[in-house]
Length: 219
Length: 82
Image (cartoon, rainbow over all chains, first blue to last red; front, side, top):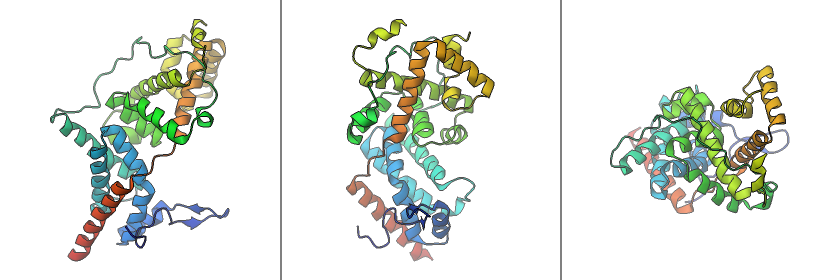
């Protein structure tokens, strides 16, 4: 695809330190006024995040590609319905989450995939690994190595926990935005987030703990 | 003193700094006195930091090309209708 109308991450305003700040609002306004290159730049800004989100929810590359494409095509078609009362990013994430959940349902033979199933928050041990980490993984591992470890850990979560963690802690949506995107109550988001965080902590600790620290659990 | 179970139920609020100053102090006191909960807090904070810090992988070029081709078709369709 040629550069022309679609050139990634080039739009923005020059800030005082010379870096280019991304101005989402201005791009959305231009796109709504019919400027297709502005919409393409919004795609270029968020395609990586939407693709990551789609892969993490569907756990399938082919479905993730469909979700990525369908989400942006839907956003383009319904741009007039976007009134700017939330960020464009939040809006596209909500569209992508819906598309991804539909994919999951289809793949599971049209059985309803509910994120609102009961979860128990009893005594179940999610803090078995009590060990300090061996330094900072960001310094010890390359981005690529880290990505593999983090992907494996997140894929091990149940869909209900994975989606909540993905939106709250990776895409950094608020509790309210996450609840709205997933059709969950706020207490449900909070309890799932706690479970997801603890389970991921558990998994990563197995990977990153300081050798010989197992005995620390006696404390 | 707060039990570990009570502390765990407040862990998110502590991590997200969504507590009152008094509640935070109460939770902080527990961490200072309980090495296990201190480790859980420390490693959960590191878990969140590492997830927030890692960059999303670039969309594979062929996937990106198909996306942009589909968008171009949709845009041409829209222009055709205008």
